[in-house]
Length: 61
Image 1: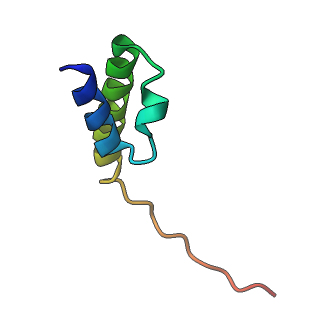
Image 2: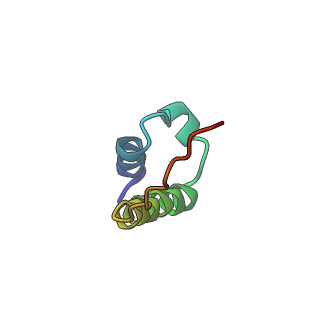
């Protein structure tokens, strides 16, 4: 993947990352960040299946 593709893929996942900001980093750092974003997405999908048990609410006296 070339530099422009890395930046475009990162921006698909992290829409707040500007090209100006990302262009400060070398290709290796961009690839590492993209890998981190992809891993975070995968973990979010895994965690989203978890449902917290409802607690019984008590009336305040």
